[in-house]
Length: 246
Image (spheres, one colour):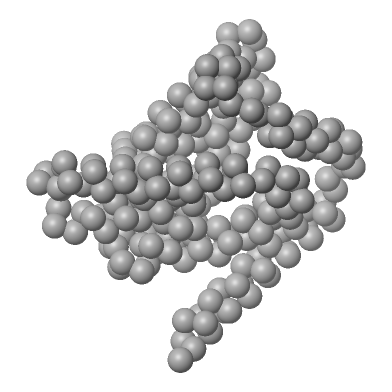
């Protein structure tokens, strides 16, 4: 069982790197079908969840390392991911996208409230706090979850169980969505959905990605890592200053 913080982080990164490269290692037709249904991101979710369940690492011993690194790395990754976010193309999606987003958000919130109303008898006294953090995760990702966890003061032990359930549900849900993609045209036809704007934006983004053939040099990698970590550090300082402001 892994108990050292650095070894814990190294193992996570190494396992993720192996899983990401599996489609390059296994290139047969059967492997392609499997990876189309369960791509590397799903395998990372599922694989790390299983390893956590079999206690490859000690959650209590590695909690301090996880707590120290989760926010700085999350902010850095969000900044790097958003560098190529084209807001003009997203705005072209218009009010329908916003209506769909808010409808999905409301349905998720109602789902969590209904689930708690049904199962609260079998859950702990403060289970609503963990469910609130999970609800934030499903609405807006890990950043929301961490913010709600801090706001509600959810202890790490409770969140550990909640994250296991979140990983199971997210893995199955993502796999279902990937399977359902093959029926998207039939579903859109059945619901009379007009997807022309979304299709145009998607095609434009794909064309832009194909046109960008510049190699990713080590200098660029250094700039990305350095700028991401710097923005993360400044954001945390700014957040602390805002929190302490009268």
